[in-house]
Length: 246
Image (cartoon, rainbow, N blue to C red; front, top):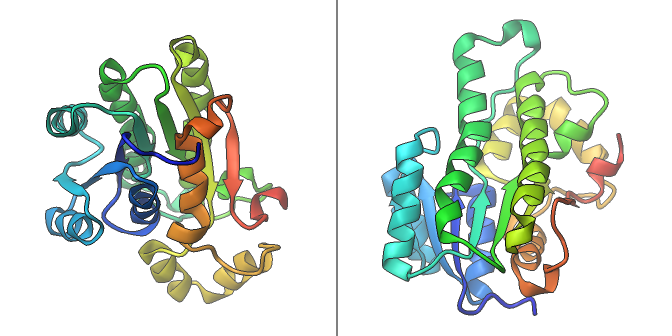
């Protein structure tokens, strides 16, 4: 029941990092996968590497979301799984947050998730699974330096629960997945903030930052599969235990 044979998945932010790791795991589980990323060369290379389809699109744009979903259905005939992963992270104390930063974090995170769920709805039905990527940062009592990011992920989690209720009678499941994984964004940030990165590592009982494909990918595959047919509206943590330390 953990297999995804015959299913079609669309993964935003799939050109690298967590999105690409989840996409790899879904391809390995038998799904046909479409990657969406705002950088055309990156998404084409990633798609070619894993045997997927790559589409250039900006999650901030409602028209891009509709185009990517429509193109997925046109080329593959259906849509069963949507993974809303794309999100531009800006870590700043509240008083340093500019209007531009506010717009970027909110639009790429909350609005991107909203746009793709709304665009996907006419094409999905009973048995479909939506997975919205959130973060254990939103669960911490001290979110210093991540005011926008933590708030936006909390908003995505709340919207996830609402849509799970609204669409549940139609057999559509919607869950939030909170990973703690290595990625290009993590590598860049941790190199710039080694002391904070070491603190985060110390908060992970498993003792390491997870691998997107091996540690988080199988959890996403489970949530997308028929094995999770009774799981909806949930927050699932795949973060080595960090989210429990709050």
